[in-house]
Length: 263
Image 1 (tube, helix red, strand yellow):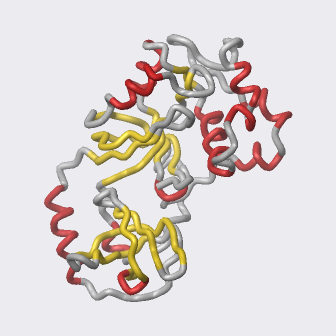
Image 2 (tube, rainbow, N blue to C red):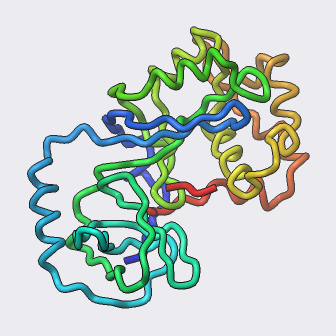
Image 3 (cartoon, rainbow, N blue to C red):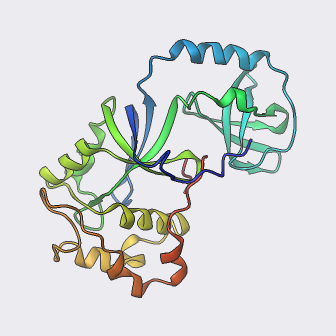
């Protein structure tokens, strides 16, 4: 079953979600703050039944590519899980377990094709990026990093602005956005601009944002027309960036698929 093929249409864009944050991934030199969370759900019994069904169904072996959903066996215990292939090298597959939040490295013999029926329930574990927030300078301050570290185990409500490759959520969390501004930890940027930033960092993860988008970092703290402060609405800045970007970068935007963002 392919994980691709669904974009951020009205059925997914601005979808409200309730999550418990399990892990926060941040680095002072990285602009994007990533998270791993678990849905606040009352369907635990359904997942228990599903896990039993996964053990019983016949395992069909066929070609499984990167980004595909699949069933994967943990060889130590013989248990099968729902997963998605994140990397394939020779005969070794790295598979993200969508209900456990960990990655298994297994041989091809431990991989089986997925069926639609076994993927009706959403993943228990989701990965994402906190949307529309940026540091005050080129990197997050120690105070901001302390704030992010304190988010673990917090229950949040957010709005899905896009679903990126490998089912990574671009999640706008009003509480976090408000804290970032009120505590002077960072600035807010409009959603279109943030999606462009994510795309550029995905395409060139080793290239600092200040080199890819110099206008963004040079202007955003000197011009109130670019970024919001306090309660003012976020202002789009794509128009000020377009002349300095190639047409492909502006036209392309963020491609959204079903399927955890790997950089």
